[in-house]
Amino acid sequence: MSETPEVIVEYAYDHISEWYLQWVDSQKSPRERYTKRLLEELQPSPAILELGCGPGVPILKMLLDHGARVVANDISTKQIEMAKARFASATLVAGDMTALNFEPESFDGAVSFYTLFHLPRSKLKAMLIRIHSWLKPGGVFVFNLATIDEEEIHGEFLGYGMFWSSYDVGGNEALLREVGFDLLQVEVLQAGDGKLEEDDPDFDAEFMWVVARKKDSPAEQNALKMVELECAVGSETLHDEHLLGESSQSFEDDNENDENDENSLNR
Image 1 (tube, one colour):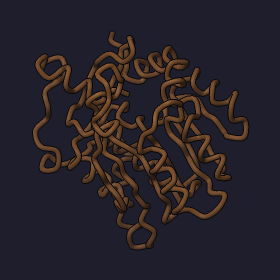
Image 2 (cartoon, one colour):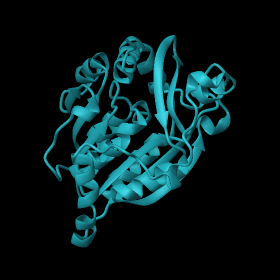
Image 3 (tube, helix red, strand yellow):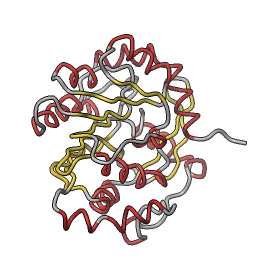
């Protein structure tokens, strides 16, 4: 029986944790700029949820330095241990993000970088609905997504098996609006401005960066109840066919596109 995506991702990040810390600590990316935008949108001492915090560098550190009260999660127990050693004031939770439970409207903001595309895309809608419910009205969510329309990509990352799954830009935007987010900013950027060396893990990768706000009027919130109910009864259908188009072929069935897809999702 094949391993689940969650097991694949957890195992890989547990085993690359030390190298990953060194790498992210030396790299600059739009995540710092987007985190700054989040903090500018919120009141002082905000309650913030970070999904995919890794070892806590650089985003968890930025949030805490700003005075935020942070709950941070990562699927990798090893990386959570590393974050705890550096940032004792944060609440750190190891495990699958889809198993998290918080009271509605617990957070002023949320952040998730290089993380959501490790979920099977059949689970993405349900996860976004939960994030939306955890935000206070008017809460802000900053994050990035991949831009390839692939249900499953199995590849290698730093010597370990890895899993990715994604919609294209149009599919991502439609899903976010369906869930109930206003899209304040969306941009598609090549990692490293397209200037990375071929041996860099993000070489030739492209990401969709988003600033989204939870709609805050009663009428808007009532309109979302049917979407939330659909998710609660177990429907994880992400989009109608007119939003998503035809299903893409599996990673294994298209050897010609293997290298391009893997390079575009190297996280």
